[in-house]
Length: 346
Image (cartoon, rainbow, N blue to C red; front, side):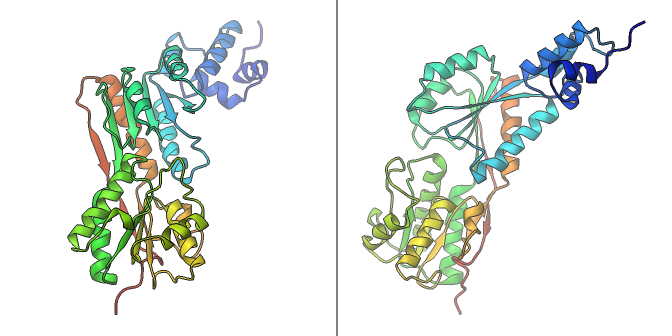
């Protein structure tokens, strides 16, 4: 009687780790190709503990595609969001694939073909903001949950949901708080392309609503709204020149995210301005840029891992119930007051 085949034997023949083989045999998440290799080898070696063909079915469940317009693992905000997606998919044995597209290089047909051949059950869309691209994506009639969305109206199938942060209201409330509890505001400047995505648009609208609430005048001549595709929001020198060209001196700069807020702080320092005495700055997202240097930037925090978790849950609900009405889920953002606005009036 021969020696019983072990998991180690299978792992050695496939040049895989014992842990990977064990996961594949126990229905836990591993890539589909790896799972099939393990199961076929286990059958070939007559591995006695191999479950029936239900092993493959138990491991498959839903196949989810994480679709993004840029690499996600080098962006602080998305590192946490993706972790929430990955953790939930692992716990539920969902297969998670990732596809990063480049509109300048990749044709949409390539993506469409990939989605079909990979038998994708649903898509989580991140950094998918281009109107034409989103319209084509919706017309694939595959369940989708977007994290953030295009700022433009699109026409397409409504087989999608949206997860976003509470952008507009929190900006409005912050402006009212600063005006009444820190120092009176006369002029406010928005910095960022409000057409870039829905969240930037709502942050801009939140600023305008806040300006209306405190009853001060404002025009677009007081804002820095360059097209994100052409304007260098990472250059302090560029922002410095824009500040010098503003119609009025701003008491507060409302920035579409923390990255831009940091650039504004650098530009103000080049101009010899003291923050927050001469001008205050606020960003959004509460990422590393907000606290890495002085002054630390007032921002807004949303639980990024929870955003990812909810995106998967909402998508799975749509996969399993495709006729449910499209919905938008707004998650609470919390203000984080720091040095860039933190001086209270005496």
